[in-house]
Image 1 (spheres, rainbow, N blue to C red):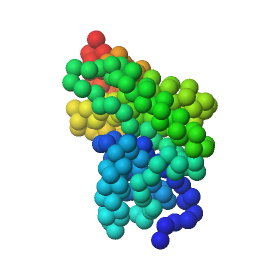
Image 2 (cartoon, rainbow, N blue to C red):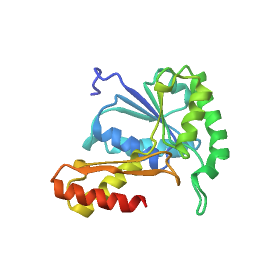
Image 3 (spheres, helix red, strand yellow):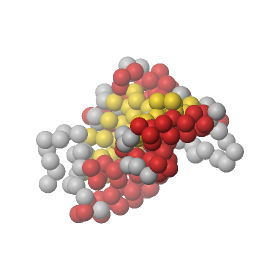
Length: 211
């Protein structure tokens, strides 16, 4: 039986690798009562929903189904992962024209459905598309969140942890700027919660990586 005390509804737009991975994570975490998948390919959305439902005996009970933009009207969170894929040799910024056009259409339909929740944007180029989402929706900035450089930061922390053989959760390092080719390694502030000697090694390594 679904836990009625949660009263949480999440809509994921785009059932590619990112969208389905996010949906799978929600199923495992059990933090949502209702999960709706939307995709331009309705059959794919329905197939992904069935796969998630078939895994429910090993996860957490929730209402998972394919839907359309009308399902956004009472959603708490809409996660945007739809868009054109990045091709070999193509930068994230090359995707701007294509994905900005896609987002203007998608966000417009979501807002027209009466959505009053929070947007989370994960499609590239994520920084620009987060701005597009805010402009098209008219929502205040605190209700439009982009994934930014969180993935890059996670990779950086893992690599430092692997190099020094420590738990990456004890690594405090950041990638800042855009999620793309001009992002910056904020390595000077990198440190590990282990020992001063290793922290000095991290500082030297991070400085080399920044040069």
